[in-house]
Image (cartoon, rainbow, N blue to C red; front, side, top):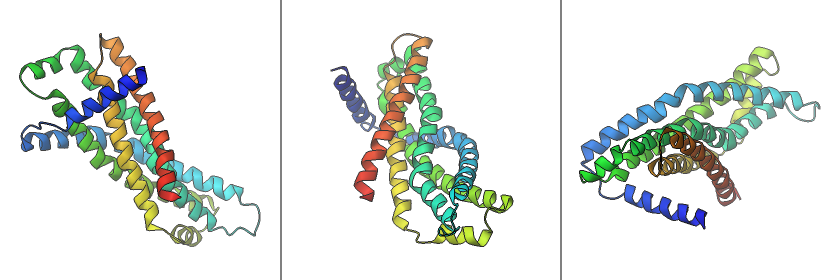
Length: 246
């Protein structure tokens, strides 16, 4: 019953977040601020992880090819498919659930325990809309962009790894990453990133909004937000894969 209560409370909070918006100029300013804080602030870690993971994926694939019956361009093909279909949209979302999610929960949770949210409500401001909606919109806008950057850097990391180590020549790798490319796979990755962005921000905001107690409870809420977001991402990853690819 506790899970049903939390789910119902979560749905009501999200509904409040999309109602009674303040002036559009204020919303735009908040969205831009959140894009910088949630998205641009995560760019470096996304770039580093994507580049080296792409390199590792390519090296591991090249190391597994032990028979001449399998063409070496399979390395480029497999690296591209792995990065586009799973690594960039899902693994990067799990990483952002830890970085972005904990940040959102701690920020809103701190405002709750210091009674800043209560002050907004007293002034007649829809606190859920003012605090949560800009974060949701910002994450839905910027996380798909981070996913595209991750895809590009992941494939490039595989290229660098293969050509610098001598495992594969550049022409063969490029042929592999262009072989039988399906545009829908990129659309599929972006759809997943949109859904995951909403999940990360909304669940983290919910956990922070309903914190009770002091700073210790804020820390516990941040941990819960990361765990809940990660489990939801994995669940929806399965659902979306089943719906879109099969």
